[in-house]
Image (tube, rainbow, N blue to C red; front, side, top):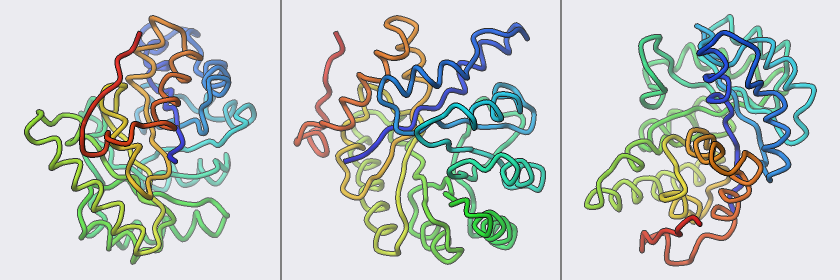
Length: 252
């Protein structure tokens, strides 16, 4: 049964649009936990476009589930992680020009740099996940670097039309199985919504789904606590036919 990590970056996006003090993502994290979030995820970007250092420091004090820090693989972010000590770090690719993360890490070509960072964080008892596309080559490279987790990029699945979606789902199913066989724990995320999450939640070996934009969008209508609770219900109780039937529940 998969758990739910709630990404609260988009709350900070609204605040930073006006460079003011509200909405504050820190108390919103508390509401997400009340709604059932098993983990709070934040991405501290190099350009600080949404989450700020102050947010991360306060979240470390108030989060009672788990704090997952998404970050670029560089020395500045490693120093911050070692100081804040999140419950886990997810290393992600990052480009200043992108609106959101566009794909997975190239673990194969960045192996030397990633290996040093993974070891440094793990020596500080901070487990590391690598955000990757569901490709056997990237999964095997992640295993070779002794990462604790991989987070499989679900963007292609989320953006696929109905003809291609089952193929993209099969890649995630196979990627999860391959990662598990290599001793890697598996999370996934990117582009997951109330309409497409059930088949991903039904994958054997899938531990946690990290979801932000869809939940925060839903929260504008029904409130954050209820929006999290609704997503948690879909993840914990996906219909048995969801994995290959691609049926979706309707929101009321």
